[in-house]
Amino acid sequence: MDSRNFDRRALLQGAAAGAAFLAPGAALAQSGDEKAIRAAVERGHDASIKRLQEWIALPSIAAENRDMQKGAEHMAALAKDAGFQHVEIVPTSGHPGVFATLDAGAKKTVGLYFMYDVKQFDPSEWSSPPTEARIVDKPGMGRAIVGRGATNQKGPEATFLAALHAIRAAGRKPPVNFVLVAEGEEEIGSPHFAEIVRRPDIAANLKQTIGVFMPSNGQDPDGSTTVTLGSKGIIECELIATGEAWGRGPGKDVHSSLKASIDSPVWRLVQALQTLVSPDGNTVMIDGWNEHVRPLTAREKAIIAENARLTSEADEMKSLSVKHWIDDLPWQASQERLAAAPTANIEGLVAGYTGPGGKTILPHKGVAKMDFRLVPNQTHADCVAKLKAHLAKRGFGDIQVKVSGGYDPTETAEDSRLIQTEIATYKKLGVTPTLYPRNAGSWPGYVFTAPPLSLPAGHFGLGHGSGAHAPDEYYLIEPSNPKVAGFDAATMSYVEFLYALASART
Image 1 (spheres, rainbow, N blue to C red):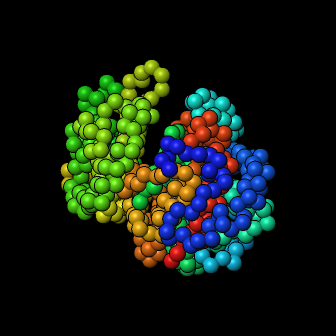
Image 2 (cartoon, helix red, strand yellow; image 1 turned 90 degrees about the horizontal axis):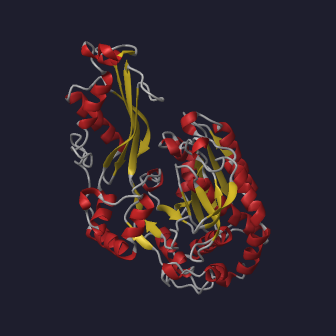
Image 3 (tube, one colour; image 1 turned 30 degrees about the horizontal axis):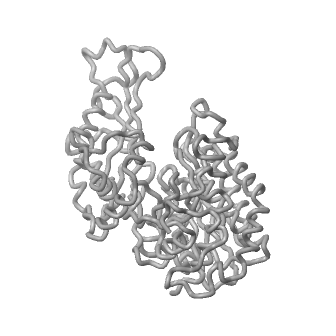
């Protein structure tokens, strides 16, 4: 069935297993558990929504060092409440994470990745307070929870936890065992997450899994969804220019009239930034940056072509409020560039006075907050070294490169059991997904997909939300569009996925 004909009743009641790699009689529809679990999902709806609202009310923000220990403790409590028998808070060189296991006595074990941190917010920019998690009527969309973390990432994660609660409330055991690793630094580039995953006992537990997935509300407003086979890597950093480090310009802010006789560190920062990219800002020009970039394969190009055919360029432009792609590329070519191109992006420029009116000063310091997206076969370490060498070669060695986080790209094979089970489960639920080579965004899946674990990793889940990192972030609870799964239907999608993973042939 095409995703545009998504049937919510079919999602909740299940459909006949359609993938050859699923063992007959072992998936949810044949297990005899479906009716009881679905009833438990419906009975537990209010408690599940309250659980999500309480989680949103605790905004752990790594960038502000805000409530990080409380965030870890809350994440640990959620895991215990959902049935994980072993739960521990794991200290790192930065903010703590959580490690948990659930032994259901099953033959297979699945890895889970969670994050408990969220992005910063300015309450004045929101239509309702970002930590109150109000349920509001969203015109054209339905009833939604509005709050920081609603869609990224607490909404999908709470929905998955609701599935575990429902399975237990129905008197059943999960069809698979779980190994959960959660962090509180995803929003600052996961600088210490590898410390958790690579702890010997945690790594040994993960090594026993068939793969790792992150809960995701992956539906667009039209009900369609995409299975991605990886994500770009990232470098998050600041470039800092100061008069002190330069040895020129002021060591403190001075009157702007003195620009006639004193150098400006801010102009120096601007000049340094211009060397990083082409004049239009769209091509990274750092020395050797593209040395290891792997071009798209023929299969990746074919996947993108099919994705472009099945998706609407007009809808995408409207959702992003843009009228042109870079170089006025046609839809398919723009999607190829999205998957294949490394990027250098200025997130923000901070220097001098930024309040109302003017203030005639010559600032002693300028900061560019930047992120660089990396593609296969680039690495975080190599690209950071190249950035520093590039600046030094051009006489900007005094400009500090302050790296706050980041990691390598991640890739998972299309024919892996995890990806094929995702695809089959979506189809079974009435949603035919499109494929895409890699998410243009980033998540620290590299710690799972790279040696020594070398596991498949991905995302799964129905439902819809939007506004991540922005004001009025939301997560749909009761969609007005029947093609989009609401909270209960999304919960059942996880149940279906777990039963499918349990029955997938090795």
